[in-house]
Image (cartoon, rainbow over all chains, first blue to last red; front, side, top):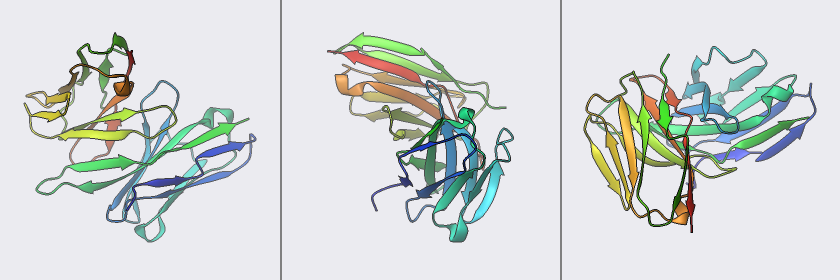
Length: 117
Length: 110
């Protein structure tokens, strides 16, 4: 396995359009996370899944954002009616539980850079 | 709300110098991770620390988790230009998601 992959790597869209990003996690990892990162900031948590169940969503997450993970494998993040403020790097990470305790270790994909014009 | 602070925000040093960056919080974490991120790429995991007082070494990098599991430091010995990047710390509490600090942007000049 070559790690977490994300597609597309870059997306330019016009304000008001819908966009969808895909994340393929490391195959044996049961948790999958979505983050958003703007210039000069650390990643901001959006949502995460354990298998196919979406366990947590950020309270800051607009209802224009939705994520799915059918069958507990790949995940998609959709943004409806994009706004210029949505321009950011969208990062996906998958994680597994370290043996012997409740500690998870996460690995990131290369990200999808969204530009809304 | 958990909050992680990192210092310094920016650091520019000459190749061969030593440096330490810090990650601090008022919250207790079950684990803490350090990442390095290069422009246009995702963060790359460097280390996970779990036990209070734990010290881990990765070649020229030394990571320490505070005794109370609220803070951590990363020390780089004899920095190289390849160490340039954004260093992020991320803390996790039991059963919860990760929270990231804003990062320390390191520039190592030749």
